[in-house]
Length: 234
Image (tube, rainbow, N blue to C red; front, side, top):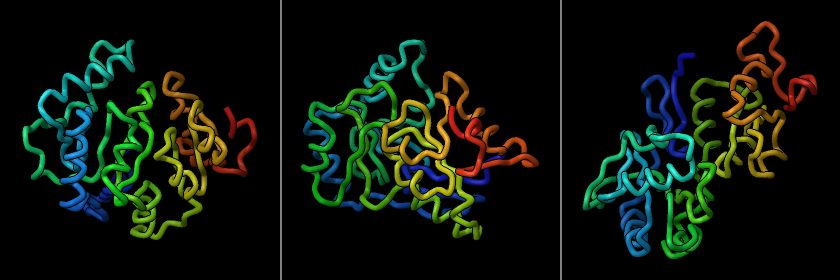
């Protein structure tokens, strides 16, 4: 389709037409404390930055094993997650905007509590992972914040925003959007916000959603809450 930009790192990094609109990172002190706690509990994790993700030695094998278990039908596992991974013994010099946790010996909220008040936690948005997987992020940074930066850049009305989500880190984005789209099987909080519910990936739900919203047929677009019920709900 030709994308002009992206909102990444759960809203912490925004780039449009090669212009960086936002790049929020952990402070040096917060990063150091986070790494200390992750190491203490032997957490399997990656640090997310705009150009790469970082992890300690052995991360690739550990994450591959976890994801292979979550996606048993894929002989290679989701290689797109691991492709940009760089592993280093000392990660203290690498800045990052979010931490994705694939496995922890303690629940992710416990990690966040020990790190301190300047961190927030969410369950994992990767379907199939256990409850000891999740995300650590900067409070107040979410996808709606990133989208707000984009529409301000272009002068777009918030009512014209269409957001599609399936995980806990999509909640603010769907609440912000003029048209909220949730994937079948999403957490109940997302489904309650949805103007449209689409099938999951196995049933080409994005194709269904784009068609139902008229994004592939501009001349018959019927987006949002005013669309016919047969087009709005799967």
